[in-house]
Image 1 (cartoon, rainbow, N blue to C red):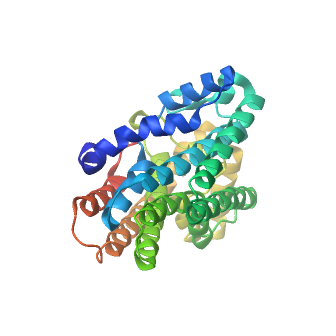
Image 2 (image 1 turned 90 degrees about the vertical axis):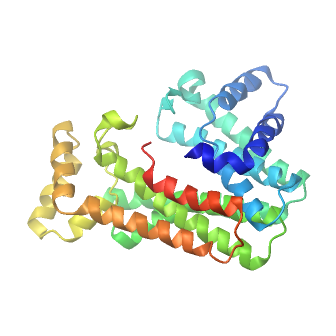
Amino acid sequence: MLDQIKEPISSHLNDFEPFFRKNMGSDIKLLDLIINYIVRRKGKQLRPMLVFLSAGACGQINQSTYVAAGMIELLHTATLVHDDVVDEAYERRGFFSINALWRSKVAVLVGDFILSRGLLVAIENNQVEMLRVISSAVKEMSEGELLQIERSRKMNIDEETYYDIIAKKTASLIASCCANGAISANATKDMVDRLYQFGKYLGMAFQIRDDLFDYQPSGLIGKPTGNDIKEHKLTLPLIYVLSKSNPLERRRIIRLINGGKKANIAEIVDFAKEKGGIDYAKNKMFEFRDNAKQTLEIFPDSVYKKSLVLLADYMVNREK
């Protein structure tokens, strides 16, 4: 399905790779070695896809679109490098993380370098509005992570707070991809706003799907079952069933989560399934997906719009 989604922009994605690599370059040998390692481990290219498809849906893909995709990918890459340091994660996408290979101090400095390159790409190309949009997203991502940490410690995340967290930590970046794609194509304010909203809904659906992986057998994906539960992160399936539980049942499940034992994970997952938490989260995920599609209705039919609609379906049906 991804190949079908990428088809209208496949040549742009191919041209984007050398553009991105050029903007990551450095004369420092160690830094250049690490940058090469990062570039070779690129994922699905989801963010550049969103930028190019959004630009195409609004008009013409141009040099500014490459700048938009480049700065977003740079800033996002910097946050991933820093996240791995914060989480003490030694693996990402099946490869060793930067901090695993070169230690945390080097990883932080590399993240800082990539972050500065993202800012400079915007400034060098005089894209102040794009910089404002992506900087706002990075600010929200930090706030979302800190809000989750604060509330998880107290185990008092309700459904509204959960949506606030995932809107900040995940949906804000996806929304900024879509908005900056539209800005690069000189879209009207209404089109920019609508694509931002499309990205926001898409990001919410994406994160709920991600959270649901926690309740699946670990053989289907690289992420082990109960990973969020082990880290005391409350996500929508558990938040919903805990809100419907009596005080005694709620205290029992919270004790199991806080216990952090592997044996408790299966019991907690079974509880969420039996009480309807999985089905509830899936329905909310499809609701956000449908809202995303609805925001595209004002756009003229095109291969780019079709791919955005397909991407919304892909987000909720993906298996990893």
